[in-house]
Every structure is written in C-alpha cells, then in structure tokens.
Image (tube, rainbow, N blue to C red; front, side, top):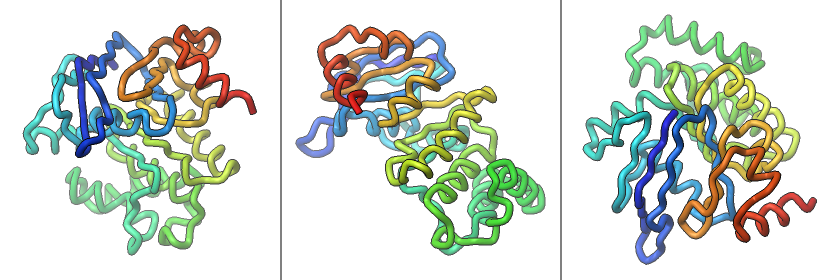
Length: 243
C-alpha cells in the first residue's frame, strides 16, 4: 500500500483539524496513526477512507488520486472496509443480518451466498452461538467483532479502524485487538487509529505521529518507539508509556 498526502487541510468551522499535512509511504501493509487526542488522527482516517472531502491538498493511494465526485467515491468506499469506535451496527437486526444486508444491498451478493459468508465469519470470530442476537444483547467486544466481520465480508482492499477499542474495557479491548492482529498477520492491509501503544508497537508496520493537524514524525514502528526524533513524539511517548 503506497500513500501520498500533499498539503492536505481540513477545517470544521473555525477549527483547523488538518493543516497542510504531508506524508509519503512507498510500501506498508499496516499504517498506524498515533498522537494526542484532537491532533487530527480520526480526521485523516476519514479523508483516507473517502468519508469526507479535504478542503485542499491531494490524497493518492496506490498511485490513484482519491476521487472528489460522489459516484466515484461511492465505488471507492465499496472497495474498502471501515470499523468505527461505536460499532455502527443496525440495532434492529441480529448479528448475522448486520453482515448479510450490506453484502446483498451494496455488494450484490445473492442472499444465500451472503448468509453462507456471514456464518463463516461469525464462526471464525467465535460468534456463531450469538448470530441471532441483536446488538443490545451482545457485549461491546462481541459487537465490535461483528462490526469487523461485516467490514471484511466483501474482501476489501484496505480496512480502516478508527479507535476500535476506545469504548471497551481492557478485557474486551484485548479480544478485539487479537482479531485485528490476526487479520493483519493474514495479509490484510490496514490503517489504524489507536491509543493502544502496545498494539501499535507490535502490529503497526509504519507509524505516523499526528499532532496539531500535521505529521510530526513518521517511521517504522520499531524505530519510532525506540528512538523518537522529535521533542513532541518523545514527550508524548514518555507520558503514554509511563504506566
């Protein structure tokens, strides 16, 4: 996965979320975005996923500039998978139907094929016994695993994870992070926003430290954790790794 970001800016009213952010990665299977809250990580992920438009600048992924028109963006979104902080499951549908519905309505699978694929994924993520339960009947970790199953059900080119464990307790966080790590080890390309530094160090192939709407530092994960170059990254890691 090659990523080129050139002078990307994004504002919400008077608040500047990204300020002429630039980043170039020749090849990575997993890009992890870390940094302080409000620094621009989730905004950057949403732009990379085509969920929002930048105010200015260019975004190029694997040699293709991200389109601006809605029709092309819709096709791009159909080729990726996104897992949000709050699951975004349909509350009135059970776990299996939450996976089946997008496969049928968005990706054009026959209902029986979609059901077969959903069952396989639920079994893979140890959710088979819970396939008929609605989100309100599942734990947070189970809901997030359903959301991940839905995100990979159409074999996306890249999976985007936006702080997928921020609403979970430590035990549930661990079970979700295990699933994400398994997917990456199986060869899935991923872009991950996370505050879980142990996970970022172990799984992230390349890290970008985002603060004040810019990429302050970018390097292989082992290098950034071992010897951060910038004062901002040093201070941030000294604080989050202290405990």
